[in-house]
Structures are given as C-alpha cells and as structure tokens.
Image 1 (spheres, rainbow, N blue to C red):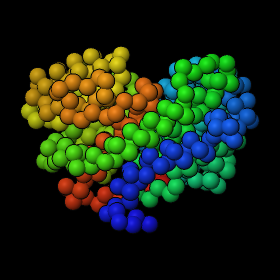
Image 2: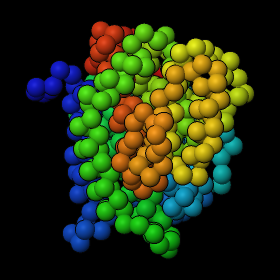
Image 3: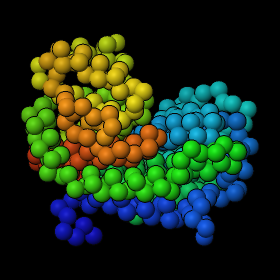
Image 4: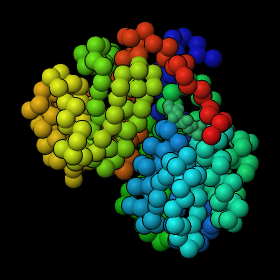
Length: 357
Ligand code: F6R
C-alpha cells in the first residue's frame, strides 16, 4: 500500500535507507560478520571469470557491481545486456560463472541466456528480489535483495538493493580469496543508509532543480566518468522512462567524439562527480559543454564540492557512491514527470516485468 504517498515511486525511493539496513542485517551472521553461502563462494572461487547478464536498470547495477568485484576480489568481470548476449555470445573463458541480476526474476531476455548457459553446463547465480521466481528456480544459486515488493514500473529501491548486495558479495569474495579490505563494509553501508536518509529529506530542493532544468526542455544529457558514468546511464533511463524527456547518459570523455554536436543554448547537462581521480576531467567536460551554451547541473560529493555545484551529496566510500548519487537523479526524474503531468507509476508502453523476448 502506498499509504500517504501520492505515488509508489516516491514511497520506494524513501524506503531505500531501510532496505540497505535490512540487507546488512540479512547478510550478517550471529557474530555480525557479513557472509555469503559457502556453496556460492566455492562456485565463484572455481571460476576464472564472472559474466553478469541483465537488462535495463539491473544491467546498470551490474556495471557498478563489476567494478566492486574487480576492485575488491580481483576477479575479471564482463557485463552483458541479456538480449544481445542471447544472440551474440562472446567467446567464453575456460571456467565462466554467470550472475543474472533481475528485480522480478522473470525477464525473458535474461532467462533465454540462463537456459543457454545451463545447457553448456556452466554454474549460475541469480540476484533477485523475488524468491521462487523463474530465474531463481532455474539457477543453481540465489542471492535475495530483500527490498520488499517494488510496484512502480521505474525501478528505484531494487537498483540500490542490487548494488548493496553486490557490494557484500564482492567483499566476502575478496576475503575468501585472502585479500583484506581496508574498510569495514558494515560501517560504510551504515554511513550510506544515513546519507540516503539525508537525501530523501531534500525533496524540495530537488523539485526546484527539476523545475529549473527540465520543465520545458526536450532533451537532457548525463555525463560522468567510471562509477559516475554508470550512474548517469541510470539517471538518463529513469528520466526518459517516466518524463518522456529524451535523455542519454555518456562517458565524459566520449562527448567530444560526437555527442557534443547536440549541445545547444540551454541544453541541460547533468554532470556527476563523486570520484576523486576523475573529478578534474569531468569538470573539464562541463566547461566544454558550457562553452557551447549548455545549462550545467553539477552533482558532486562532499569533499570534492565547489561553489559551482548545483547539489552536493554526503561523502561515502568511493565504491559505494552510486547508492547515494542515484537518489537525486531518481528524484529529479520523479519531479520532472510530475511537472509534466506524466503517469509516474505506470509510464506509457512499459510493463513491470518484461516476459517476452
Ligand atoms: C527501469 C526498469 C527496467 C528493468 C528491466 C529489467 O526502471 O525497471 O529497465 O530494470 O526491465 O527488469 P528485471 O530487473 O526485473 O529483470
């Protein structure tokens, strides 16, 4: 039930801090240590490469997860769009393991890949919100999101739940390989949950940002580098699917290779900067678009913020920034859709789970 909320999407955005806290709890053992089923760890430790297969928002969460797994556990990861992998399977490593990320656990494109790779005899793990779903039943192993039912068509809390679960998976895997983490993930996820709460209380500010940048525009670009690029892809998908504004996410460095031709006077460009090593580069990209007349909206993180920034998210661990930087983007999409009188929870042409290929 959406209770006093006008839309499920807003309710689900607000549930994100709780969901992160619940995930921490669900993955802790009696001693408060984060754990993953040892059968899953053994299967992953037997593999030489992880293939993440997913669609839409879950694909975007997979991109973030791949970075966490590579950085912490040092296992190579490839991330594939299910509908492409299905018809164009890459040459696989000698010992692949497949991770299917799917909120619903019912996405036909992902299932088609699962059927193919099971036939080839490879181990499979589904990360899903729905116990007993098709992908969960058919894969060898399951990790649950514990996000509670997601009703709005636009995925919000499932995305952050996927990232939180993948962070736990990456850190436990790293420790099982003998790498000691330089941080305490339980503590860092607690900091994330608190930061998410702060962000959920900035709705008025975000509403006015949505009004300033998006009330009349026909398009909008999102730029970022590394983690922020992946979050930009998600911000663009959220915006286009519920507000019908044409939105695209780009890697900051790719701008000059074509997209910059689309920048006109007043074109909104939302730049995300939470990664210290690319902060100067992305700010350089902002200057390039501003010189062509763009209307820049810079979303940065405390510690990297400057006076030119439009919105600053609280500081969290550099691998966990997507969990917080996505919240203003979800809210921007929500308010842009609201201002344009769009059906927020049930956008045109879309279904909650896509059960046809
Ligand atoms: C976007 C959205 C879709 C889904 C995609 C995959 O907000 O909801 O892009 O993420 O259809 O769905 P699942 O995760 O159920 O496999």
